[in-house]
Length: 210
Length: 210
DNA sequence: CCCGGCATCACCCGAATGGCTGATGCCGGG
DNA sequence: CCCGGCATCAGCCATTCGGGTGATGCCGGG
Image 1 (spheres, rainbow over the protein chains, first blue to last red):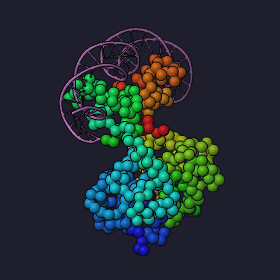
Image 2: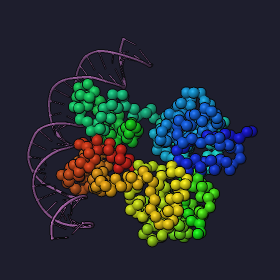
Image 3: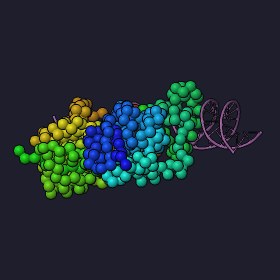
Image 4: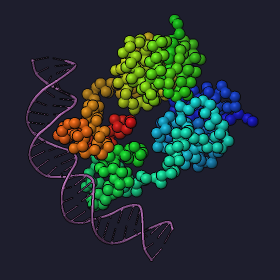
């Protein structure tokens, strides 16, 4: 069987270099190209159609997530293997929903990485144990948090230090309604005051993505 | 002149591999050893006394910061070059205060890295442009953000939804003091209420690192 | 030696907050 | 067709906040 062709996507030269070194010195893999951001990645993938794309999610200028979405949209059939640094990422699920074939952490041992790439090339999903367990628990729980659109808006304004009155003005609703929304937010997030609600918002990735 | 001897410290095998590859394939450098956490790093440094230690700050089990402090405390004269991923780090200054000789970002080009190592070996301070500019601005402005220890504690409790009264109880101080601390927090963060303070706390990395 | 920052505390007061009860209209799914 | 979730609104009320003013003690740097 032919070598598995790869496209490496990471904004850090060091990481790209490390990966390239690892794969080039191991039979069965060929590194076709490297990209340092999502835009480049999509272009290169479109031209080279590598078997597997190893991609970091967090990158300046063209996030990995958008890149994945774009790839699936264009019907490019390269398998995307997300290789990320932190497992605390809130984007695990989005990435998989967007079409990533696998998701593993950078601190995985080499053989695990090689294995993952082979699995991915074969179209099988590979997840880091840590990620996998989070996934199942995410599925298991019917999502306890998701705030309604209006509730999220209110929370965002609260995080900016806006008073209920001003939130009301800003959203063209009455102050009473703002209070109602906030009460619901509190209930859904399991807190009792706005400060804690903001904290939860950040913890759960509801806030913080400007 | 003899090779510059190196100790690589990073929790990610991929990164260590990348660095090792880069330095081994370049004349003038010798990689003595690798460590995956701060504890290991200190031990190895004590035994091998490398010229330069390339160290990541964020590591599980023995943070890089403590490692640096420990190294200076022990009088080990290896130069520490902090090689970190994000320039948003709040630990830039602490690291330098702790005794780091240089501080640069992982996405620096290779030659810059090589150069930095040589500079560090010669005892000169090297900083990434981004870091450098942040440093000067930090010096220039009397630090508008860094909260005092007590203030941070209070903010953390606020983020957990604790009322002033309960914060007072928890910290064994009076409610009045809590309010004073909070007022200072508000001023320093440029906000007017606890919710916004929590938000700023997360934005600025004061909160969110459990 | 004095000043500034930190940490501590007190008192007052008006405004904002959060809980509670209750109500209306719309929409989509069972 | 009814129920649940969303979005809207009202009024009441106890508590909590945040601002302002003022004060003390400690420490470290200039």
